[in-house]
Length: 412
Picture 1 (cartoon, one colour):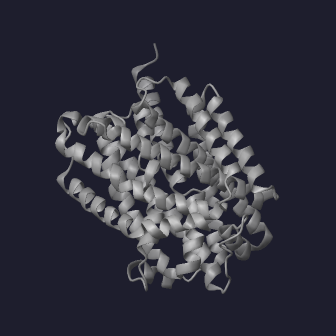
Picture 2: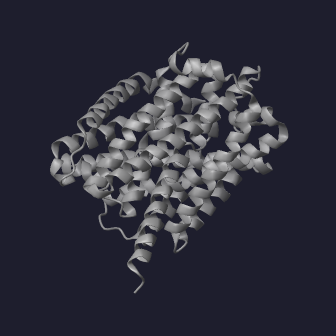
């Protein structure tokens, strides 16, 4: 038997890796091809005023994720099971909406990966999307899918952060104007905020990191501090990535460049990168976008299938892996069949998941209030619960104001 200190050391190392993988799962999924395309689209239409939308999304992200992660960890239950325990049947509704939203998101993620390979090596977006989906399926068919997924997410996340930093520096953005409009915008557009919130914390994204920690066994009151720290770190990394990406694209738009927002192969973010650092920048963007697409395909599929247990409790890891393969295959099939442009689809799915967000948040918060027995001796902070309720109310209102404009994207 190894010395106790050795065992303890390996336990701490495993815990740290689990926390890091959860952080990267959330952060890379929340800054995937949808967010990148949404950022390019809204920076083109709103300019520096879009900075306020990013700030709003980060604040909402903090409140939503910390509430959800802590409640999931304390109850040791998946979000759909928590919902069913609080309001019988609501867990099935939540699972259906998250899986549906995740499917929409994954169709867009496959499209995003295809656009990435189109920019990187000139492949047709549909061929690139098909190859990327097949690679993701290969990862999940691996007998050590969990470990492969964790390491893949971390590697792709590091690559993406480094490349975005390089391009943002090269674009020479108007930082002062962006900072002013972060807190005092010339215009506030609620459909835009709903879409960007949905693309970063809506639908399956709300539960991605929390369910990964649950699968890793980092639950219970004793792990709440670590879970909270992981959520804060993930949101901080995501927020920084969002703002840096925005600055890079703003630098291009502010120089007088007009990005193409329509057409089957329209890729406004790729155009921005190309203008910032030339042909090399265009190719670099292709790698970023492909990495974002791949990490988001994995994250969306993994988290969406984690809600399948609401309909079939006790699913084995192998069964979930095969269900994930089917999920990705369906996403690919729909992507190949539809006529909607990838860029428009990437914007629409953010808006759709922004409409799903308040439903799940409201149910989970109600469970924390009505079924405190589910959390053992853990007591959810009143101030955090209050912020969650306020955020739920705000997202319900924004969703109501945004339904029409969001669905209009499908016609583009």
